[in-house]
Length: 123
Image 1 (cartoon, helix red, strand yellow):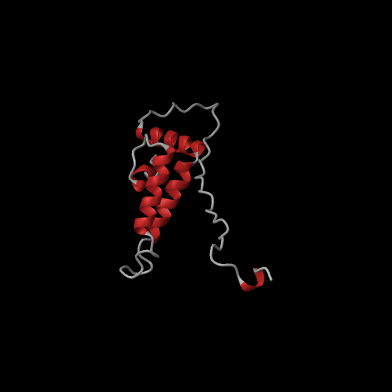
Image 2: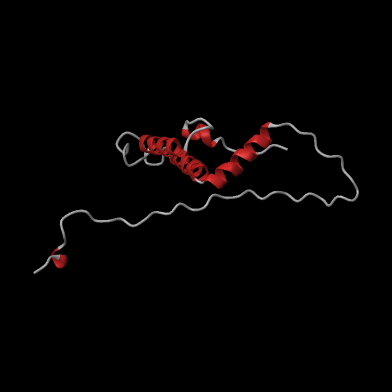
């Protein structure tokens, strides 16, 4: 049985032993280099959408220590070849594992840092 497990470390271009600060730095650097708003004059608007979503998914997994440990465990188990146990009549049938979807990314509030609006000025 093969798993379609993406290599999040390769997507972000970091080693598997990277620290949380290195993960954040690599993610921000890669997103900045691929973001369509920065390169809107040189590339079509739909170029790189899959890459950006893959980078966001990789960062969502690697930034959370529990999800990263689970990912590393799954990654390790797919590289290790093990023999399946012998079927026995008393063992219950194996249930298929459901693939966990990443949580949706949330965006925080946007703050206005310009001069105050007319209605907010003191009179």
